[in-house]
Image 1 (tube, each protein chain N blue to C red):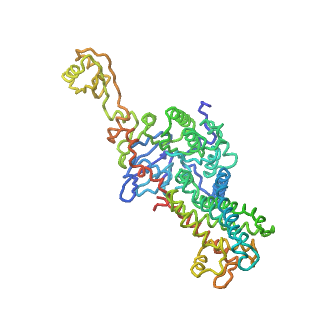
Image 2: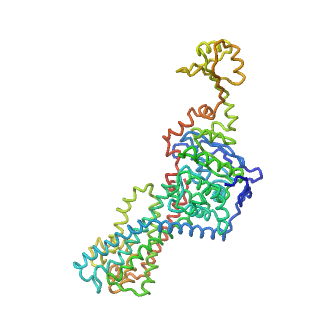
Image 3: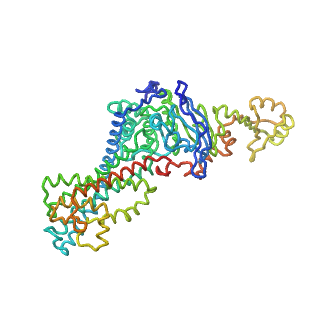
Length: 334
Length: 289
């Protein structure tokens, strides 16, 4: 293994993870640059959590290799553990400890001691707005407060890479916005690499790059814009005096097959470049147009294109809870 | 909230490969700190759950003051010496308290797993042995405390202890607590869900208690019962406590085929089993899927 200045924050090479006959992760390769906000998306059971479990040393890979901050996840487990922070899907605080005690517990296990703990802890507590709550037991915290404390905890030991496994799942929209404010501030301050899984499109949108995993394989990896461009079509919707006539005129003049939406919702067309299409469309229309809407492809469209499923459906269809979350099954499995 | 992008202390040193190679001394200090912290967590949690303290004492007190007082007139003086039944079972009831508390605390690892805190510990860059030792030390301390507190009942039932006796009882209770906690951690590592707890109580804890000589003397038993009690490790943890508290002649010490088992042999047996259990517990934590 060569550690150079160009070391990736995360480097995955042909990673395989099997549980018996079931292959949860099927030879994936990708890398994450230092400082990047990297999104790791996929339907439940696609292998996201399994991949994270391997990267954070909770599971052994069945094949291939992975390095985090330049350290091999099998040979240098403790170095990997020191280099990462984790915010899990579920709350992993001790309810009966106060916020401060939870942080201290973490700090000691990560080798901080003495005044160093307080120096590191206090500004983090302030950043997540929990200074006044630090001496309360966390069972009195709201879901959003627990999450914020966990984010502060994940950062306590100055990790190279912070894993955020659906950090805002189950939180109300306002709390989600707050959490992201903290995350943004954090990235500005500490340049921490972030490895994010999420089912929320707006969160995926914030990523520098996104990998989409489906059935244990990476099916797409690029920046959100490039991914959207790869879908290749904008959606143009017009509302006219006579949608059927409009559809026929456009079909004749521009060879674009439109779709008349039910309930007078207008005429929808999928075209490569919506903005240049609209003026050309007007040259062929004789019916009056009341309204024009051009929509770029969303990450939802990207997600559907590559996995055949909707991002939100993927969240609801949690039929593979166990498979997607094997870590909960215990530490004693061979 | 500050909005300026000032780096936090310690930030900016996050260059790749920052993790210093651990020297043996540093690793040792780190492990000791981990043990201390995991121990402290157990103590804090115990302090904050008064219901657990009270319910942990309920059963031993029922045994001592209800069962003990009720059976006392039936039994009269036990075997050799001048102790009545209540006095006889006091050490047994203390051991009972230790038994329940140790196994319950150890099995709380299963809670930790269900509530995710176990994972927070397992992804930390510390040795699994440190985590297990800390857990055993913490749960063991709590359990020994739950046993010791029953010494308050000693004068009430007429057992008068010297300071020396109390000083001798403490390490013996701690030894029993530590061994049982280690055993409990091994059970917990094989338990997937908290629902199995009832089964553990029924199939492990209660038989261990009833077949240990905690509540009846081990002399003059039917052969099968004599054999089973002497195969039960808890017997060797409880007998020394009774011998110290009641004195050799009144305690009806454990005999095997007429041979009076020396206290130090009993201590060695419990210590060996405790260490073995601990090693097993560490191993079950070290496995990675």
